[in-house]
Amino acid sequence: MRSHFYGLEIAKSALQAHQAAINVTGHNISNSSTVGYSRQVPHFTQKINTPAGIFVPSQLKSLGAGVGIDDILRVRDTFIDIQIRQESRTMAYWKIIDDGLEQIEVIFSEPREGGLTQVLDRFWNAWQDLSKFPESDATRALVAETADILSGAFHHVSD
Image 1 (cartoon, helix red, strand yellow):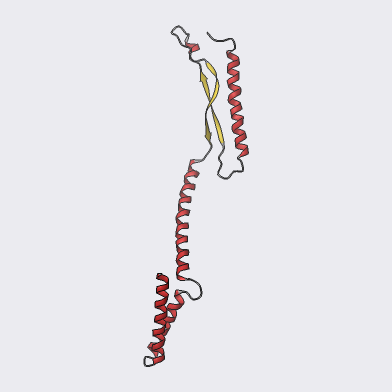
Image 2 (cartoon, helix red, strand yellow; image 1 turned 90 degrees about the vertical axis):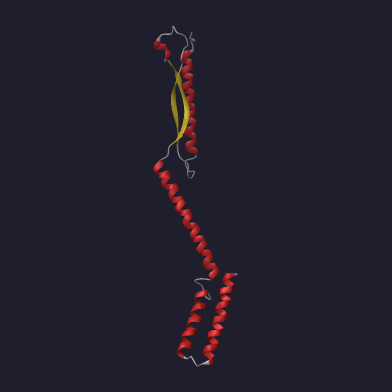
């Protein structure tokens, strides 16, 4: 047998559910400026009172017992979430490539003054001068000296 206060119980469950919804709204407002936060929405469901017994009329078997919140859902666009994840992964990949190339630039001292490119340019220019004046001992010594400098630069980069 139902209580005479059954209507008040239904009203109480409605007030409790809507109080929880107000709490969710307050949570949404307090996090509105938080980066990456997505709005939350309460999901209301009907409470069903199923009286037991075989002699209970069918219209009373599905009599409502009020409302409740069974879940709090986030409002998000799945397409945008997938896009953000994919682009974040791509950005991380290129960031790693960029960091590696910056380390290589530091190792080779490129494109700064005194880098490996300038040493190679001096080495090839010395060979060019030697091709113009093959009998000159000074140009031969210059090729040997620049080759020694280039070897030292390679050893420095290797270390």
